[in-house]
Image 1 (cartoon, rainbow, N blue to C red):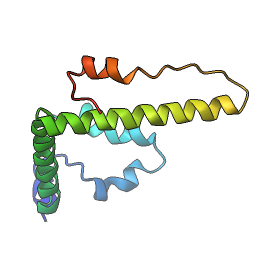
Image 2: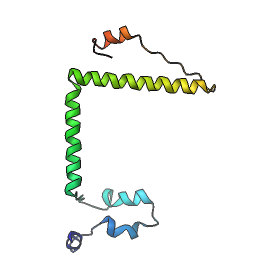
Image 3: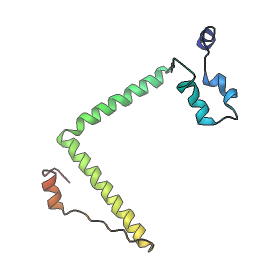
Image 4: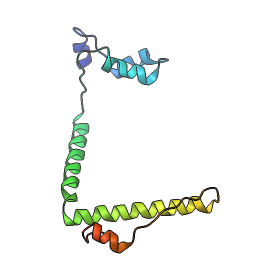
Amino acid sequence: MLYDKLRVGFDVFFFPGNQEALAGTEGLESMRAPFRRESRLNVVLLTPAKKAGLNRAEEDYRRAKASMSSADGMAKVFSNVKELFQEIRRLCDEVNAGGNADIEYRVPHPERSRRICGGSCV
């Protein structure tokens, strides 16, 4: 096993093997210590499935970012913004209906919004 080979010449922290040492300690701080203060070199091994998942997520992000600058992408962005404001409006109305608060909000006039967005807003 890689752990056995590395620990011959190095002080190795291997989480599955060092869980007992962490038991009863300050949880998160104990997990950070080997990476922040107690080492000169950190190596994180990824399984092929994990690496593939990270690569897939990165590619999805690049594609989504590139599509946002297209007309269709901008229409989707504005549609999502419209849905977000509808949800905010609904939640404000719900809170106001409880009688313990009076939240005021304003929904912009659609024609002014269209001019601001260059006619591409929904």
